[in-house]
Amino acid sequence: MYFAGRLESKNTEEYKDAARFAKDLGLSECVTDMLHMSDTELEHEKYFLSVIVDRWILRPVTLFYNGVRHHFMVHS
Ligand SMILES: [Fe+2]
Image (tube, rainbow, N blue to C red; front, side, top):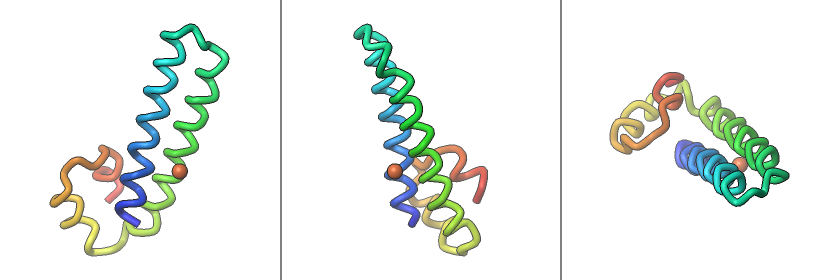
């Protein structure tokens, strides 16, 4: 679940990047969709976090893989 959450976290950022690229390319009709997908991926990330938030293993895994997103740390 932890790694699924990390994957979703990366997806969230990639959709934000895609929205920026779309905007830069003048594809304004795509920007809203990309941002919506980013929000959807964030909801997935939050779901996976909610499954593991009370598990003792979360803290050491988070410390070991210190590249996790901020809210993984905040909600753990
Ligand atoms: Fe997802």
